Length: 144
Image (cartoon, rainbow, N blue to C red; front, side, top):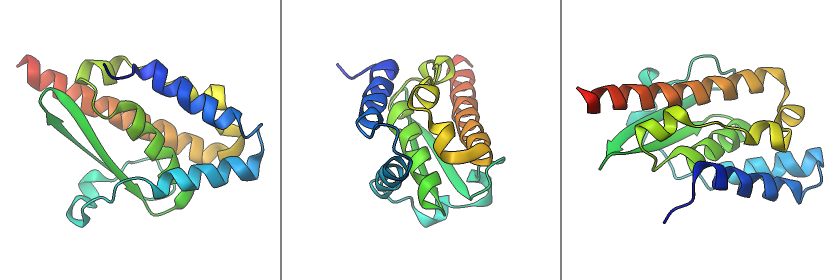
């Protein structure tokens, strides 16, 4: 059985806790995570898929496959790509309802806001909101 949303977040919290709150190492780690994000097809990098409210460009696409949402994402900046890669890791492969109901506590537990600043925090909030909107849209379709 796959890990729950909370378990994946706790894993992320543990990974960051090994860096002891070291800002440079944490940002470096975030950028590494972004590099591991699977490449997004160029045709998906359209204005329709841009997350509004992000300072950087962030593209987010979602498809419903066998009742689970598969997220794809990319960004034009390394740190933001790292942030969105964490969200993809936590929320991809979940049912629409799981995405809608998810409580994303890892941001506070890791203390990400200390590393990324206010504008990126707002952008991260916008990405989380967009993923939940996809969840709502897919669960509405499923219920129709």
